[in-house]
Image (tube, rainbow, N blue to C red; front, side):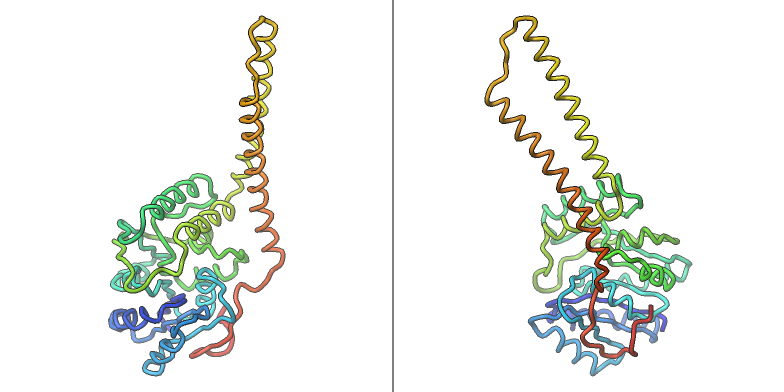
Length: 314
């Protein structure tokens, strides 16, 4: 198998036919030796039925159905586990990842790149708050993380077989693909594009909280700087408190009216309490991730396979 498309789906019955209508002719210009893997979180709509109807017409379309909803990151990793292509392309079904980029992705791979990442120039249809959170998140992550993650990129990318094999060896349970690909490394390149709006329906992804969760995975999963920052805040506040004590002592000895009062006390207590809670929260984020890794629960559980030989490739 030369090429595998991994497409995580959940409640996407209206987008699948148009996605395949646009993807299949493009794939055929590249190679007839391809597969399209729909990694399905069980959906309340007809997503599964639509995929099976399409599979009845084309055996290169395959279905990987999970036992429950594991989320898009785990669905993506599950699809990659069962992909057999020498190159694997991860993309969304809502057509915000333009299928027209597929030939260019494959061309770059044939030039010798192991990772080819489309980079968004414009994000049409996305609300301002999501764009702001994404821009701020990438800057923070790249400033403090141990790896560099290209800005304005998503999971849409081509990965060579050796990159996929190395990714599947990693044990992290958060599934932050952008960061994991950066950890693996190899030769990478970017392809700029303008991201269109969704073809149909609303995103099944919480725009603000989802972006925030991804940002936290990037910060806490690839850097310990937040722990260092909380320690630095502690020393800074302790130094400030000591300095204030000296100032008040000097004012008292000099006979100035002592300025301390109820408002000052309330502000200081609330400030210190807030810093303590933030520090505890940072510790909790790391401890929670340690707990998830120690449990070693499976990242996904497969309920149904259509079109696969038994067992994942890697």
